[in-house]
Amino acid sequence: MPGNNKLQGMKLLAEKVGVKLSEISYIGDTGGDVAALENVKMPYSPSNATAAVKKVTRNLESETTDAVLEAYQEVIEMNREGIRQS
Image (cartoon, rainbow, N blue to C red; front, side):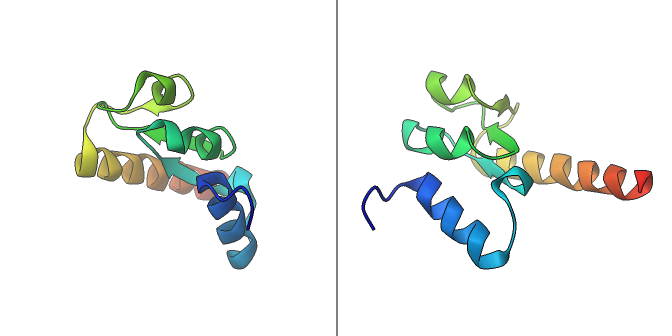
């Protein structure tokens, strides 16, 4: 597929599982992640991400795996709040 990048991968995944990009969280740390981060609902970056990534994301306090866990916890809490409000 021409133009393969992480955004195209997210679009293919979203189509495959039947969700919209506006329903997806994504965590990235380098320039190759920016296009995908700009097109999902909840973009996150670890504290050690590049400046370009930090401009388009919710910046987390942790690095690497700990940042992923921090993002998961935040998304789970948002989902719980959404369920309670339904």
